[in-house]
Amino acid sequence: MSIKHGLLALLGEGPRYGFQLKKEFEELTGLFWPLNVGQVYTTLGRLVRDGLIAEELSPTTDGLEVTAAGKDSQSSVGSDDSQRSYRLTERGRDEVRAWFATPRPATTPERDELTIKVALAVATNRPDVTDMIQGQRNEATSAIQALTRRKARLEPTDLSQAVVLDAAIARLDAELRWLDLTSARLAGASRGRAALNARDSGRPGSGNR
Amino acid sequence: MNSTILEMKQVTKSFIDGTHQRVVLDGVDLSVERGELVAIMGPSGSGKSTLLHLTAGFDRADSGQIVADGNHLSALDASGLAQLRRRTIGYVEQRLNLIAVLSAVENVMLPLELDGMGTRGARQLATVALDAVGIADLADRESERLSGGEQQRVAIARALVGGRSILLADEPTASLDSLTGEGVMRLIRGRCDDDGVGTLMTTHDASHAAWADRVLFLRDGRIIDEARPGADLTSAVAAPADDEMNR
Image 1 (tube, one colour):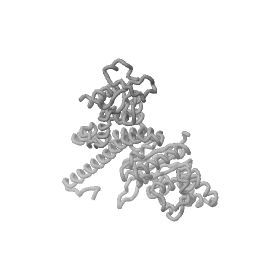
Image 2 (cartoon, chains in turn green, red):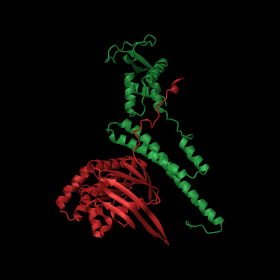
Image 3 (cartoon, rainbow over the protein chains, first blue to last red):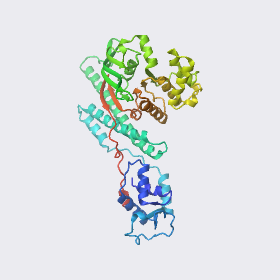
Image 4 (cartoon, chains in turn cyan, purple):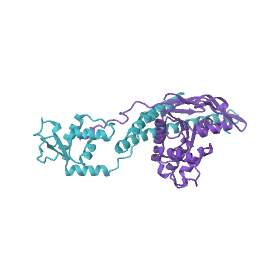
């Protein structure tokens, strides 16, 4: 995702300075997505260029209401970024509305390294696949524990941060359920093989009959 | 508060399954400190429930030691174990086992009254326990008229009433929706942090196990691994790129 829509959505709440946008974005995502100042101003510059936002030069720090806009971005080159505030244009408002209204396409991380690693371990009959799965299970569990500690410290009003943490936890939880399913599938397959071997060698299947 | 409240050493347990012996626990070592929350995860049949049953004294280990708040379980007879459960160990399970026609507070009073306490004293302590789980205002409601999450809170209050020091919880969130389950985990975490209760719980749900200080992985009757909270990762989600802006 780009931060474009994040900045636009925040500006939907009213005019903001660049540093204010950076701070608000980071707060609502629980410091998950640190932005660098340069990235914020580069993006804002492009949004101005594309007519989605307009900038206003504020002579004072509490000058957000100032309407005498220094609209011409070229004339403000060289002036201090921190003194410019930004507001949504009508086009920008449409863009925000459309962004919120459009479902993000569902994606599956089919090129996920872990998926391929486990698939390869199975395909190449690695003897350590069980340990490998457990190692990954431990890794994901530690991560969920850390995220949950952070969630435990949130105030009930930190709703957006809770939502972001829930998403990270849910993804790891899904990974863990897949690891469990994989363990069970491999165990089932090896029991099946054992039964087949037993039958082929003329003995009755042991254990599972 | 770094003292061990619950300890298992080389605990084994097997059951006769038809004609052959099935080993369910195969030399389990674990300990729970005061104020610590320990979760056990493992596939069905890995021995999770058996482990809790033995700890509560519902059943006896074949060998090994279980010590709960200084009490060697193997040295106690049936009435000693029952007393331990009334005074020291609280047990919560997925099926709540509340008495439907009794009110919340009456359910919580039960273990105290069974232990010989008078009604007035029991009611006082039960009210404190219900307050600690956040439902003091529902004290007089019949438990069958409470929601699943509220009933689980009553069950936890009943398990901890009178200042019991050990909580054993067998899949305490399994029948609850995600948010209600999170509320119950928050509550259990709070009892550990605030009252120094040592908790051992089983769960299938990693997001609930994650409230624990340690997560133990049980497989084929053995503890094979242990997870602790990782670094406070801020990089679990990658920073958004602004590549898409270059259009």
